[in-house]
Figure 1 (tube, rainbow, N blue to C red):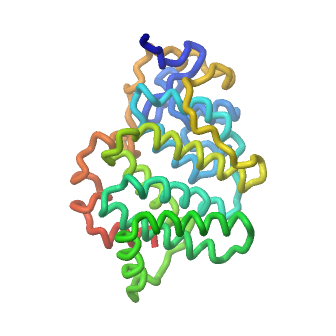
Figure 2 (figure 1 turned 90 degrees about the vertical axis):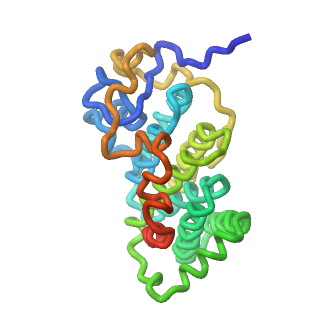
Length: 277
């Protein structure tokens, strides 16, 4: 029996890229801005900037048949914001460790460098949550020993010690992670991208004390109880791909690896890794 995985009419239909208004469609963060009562935007103030960036990239990388599965997460990012600098670390760590198992070897090197940087930043804190995150870092690096060994040698170079502020590093880590998953040969790319966004949201809520951190890894079709969305963007028949984001990551998955600025053939592994030091 064929199972219908399309969302019901009352659920907003997400599309890639940014949209001027709901009549043109909407992405994950644009609907979040609507729920928050803000001006229609894919950069709303209601959500932490790095988490919003992760959500935009995941939204753009998911296939049209799978994108609706992140709709139930939209209300969860509304109001999920803080000026706590550790939140960048929480999100970047989740992104890097999620991508490492399926990334190409060259991308694994950059992700391993990112995890080493996360370890360095985590060493500034001393609490049970930090110890759990350090254990996750160590486990991820243990599972990619060759990349980890390369990353250690890279980080030991004299010039590599000149680290930029982690708030500037974290977006590079997230972008590298989403790109690595989207370009991987894994058979469950969409599932991994959804799980990354879900767990990152749960991590943020746990860190901010608003949730116990537990997550449901079973992805069911989007439920129709996420709130009152604009009716023009709720019909599955509207043109969901009419406006692609020209400066974002809407076409990364269809872009050959050699053409992407983070791919080894477009720039050296060392240069890529330097952005996450």
